[in-house]
Length: 120
Image 1: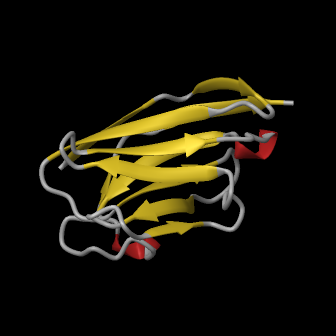
Image 2: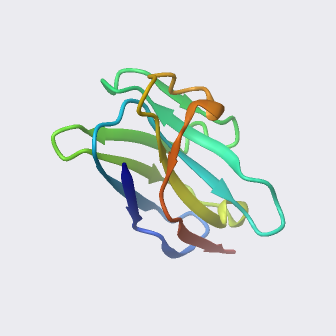
Image 3: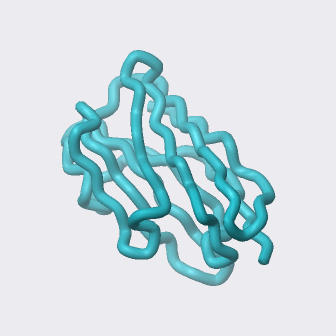
């Protein structure tokens, strides 16, 4: 499985950005992680194969929305009310052998990240 993320860029605090990730090959749960400079990677959001179940980290709950279009084999992350602390490289990830959207350790495949920079 190959994952290609896009949509990152420069934003100001309060702005919105939408990330996309296209997958080649079959996937079940998909998710987004991020890694800020000098920090460990953190699990941001996950979505089940059918798109009916989601998980969000507390720090993004109410601001970010994960969704997917299985016809396009693509997952999205709509990011609203961005904050400078959202600045990070965002990585798309997928599970191919399980559908445990809320379990970070179950994600097996990773895409190359896309940088999101939020200025104050």
